[in-house]
Image (cartoon, helix red, strand yellow):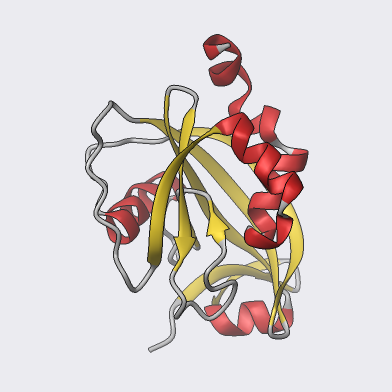
Length: 178
């Protein structure tokens, strides 16, 4: 059965199949999480079997909440499902809306609740190979520079986050680390 996610149809929030949402470019709810350790952020390269943006680098994890699922609970769930990360409780950072072509005739028009979680050194990460091809830690500002130099290696949303919203997402956290 296809996963149903919250999307706006005729101005009303309605459960709609995930693929249909992207085929029609419907505005819909999403969640993005960044796990940090000091000034470093954990990023993932999406599995090659993903139906859009396979093999591209993304933030720690991202998804769509299930119908009537709380965004914070969704963030915790996806950390566990995608990366085997438990015991972190991300803090709400901001809400960002964007629209981007993700290839194959699919459009992401997302209203994203963005969360950030600070991890202790030695965080155990066990990527789910159906979701994640690989992970790496990178300094936040090195990531932003890498996105500017090689945007084709990154998902559209990471390009948007790093070029347009880095201060909104990481502002006070990163200023304290400088």
